[in-house]
Image (cartoon, rainbow, N blue to C red; front, side, top):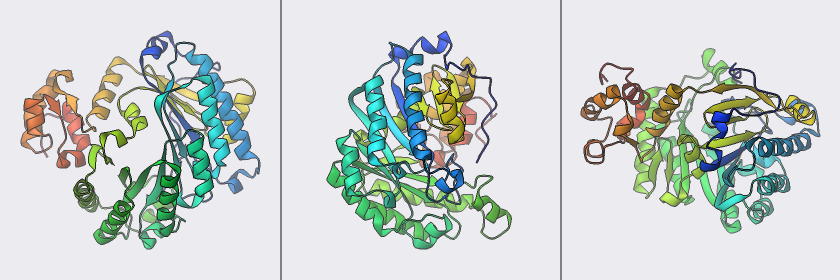
Length: 412
């Protein structure tokens, strides 16, 4: 797992500087809940997760749930009376549905009691298709959850085996049907570029996902993260590293298949059946809104201050039990850093980025980016917005460098 950034010390009280608190009442608030438990650690994953065997504590899940409730209380105290109702909640991990559905509902109730939920709030949990049944999904829906995001990853058994995914591909359809019956919106997560995955394999996974008629699809290129079993296997030459050209071809295949099925891309790796089906929680991230991350290793952002919690569940619970913030460190962003992030995140969205909001060097780079087929010419000229073409989405980092004035010309 990656180490946490150093940052600066975070105050034990969790308090935020006045500059961060100034706009709390005027900015949407999201809450992320990190459930750090998995039955098996996937070989490609570097998230902050633990199996119960690694922790050696049969009561670890209950202790973390209690600590998360305590952090919600801390968040309420820090954000104060001007905090708005929570607009979106996202439960991630790990495998959140390793917790009983009643525990997930109790955490949502904790948010509701301390902050309130805005009308029509979006409430999502991730789930492994093997980790939920009809009763659990019904309990989640009755408790206020509105979406479930299933980690499908692939429909091809040998690809799932390479990823160390343990679910049966046939169980995805069962889980989706149960979620639909409970009244939950459905998102499917896919991964492309796994060693040994052919283009035909990837097209089969896309077809299988579309056959389930989800509301939303996320498709991510496999990244080999240091410290994972997959990275070790690549280093030993047991499996090849992902090929960027192969991943580009598979991204194009995904965009073609999803667009052909009526889905619209709204962020580089995300497609929705309608604008209403977009993941509002992630849009808060990309739009620079405020969010508080609850749980071991969770990251937060409020008013230009970022902080991150200690990673180990036992340390996390102990700090909260002693009345101390679980934050391990924080970073107060400068105005320049916030502007860079606005460009970096905003350019990823299909809604685009206003040309007028760029600096002189960024505005000057636009004609070259259009000429090189990275930015849509009509949007740039007629709408004065930066909207990436499909080729631009594949080279988004290069586009960002130009828009921030870090490249002399659009040489691709």
